[in-house]
Image (cartoon, rainbow, N blue to C red; front, top):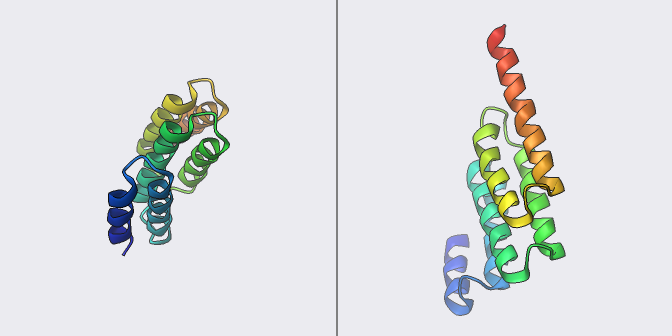
Length: 123
């Protein structure tokens, strides 16, 4: 149903419209509820980029979208987090720049994950 609605909304408003963003955020949330973190994160990254294009990187909705991405990523199991975190870091850096708070937090979490993996492989 979400796919059908996305198709209809995108057909009516186009791919770079806030109505399209909203339905794709619903798709992201549904994927999250289904436990598909990678798909959910992919949709949220997509919508954050769309918001940056439509509303600008400094718009409060865009900033909230990237916070959502980061928060969701933090809930991903550690085994999947490094690969998905690289995607998060790329997106938030593209949108807000490498020194934005969300980019710094993402790098710090990726470093902690790498250190944890390294410590786990030593023992």
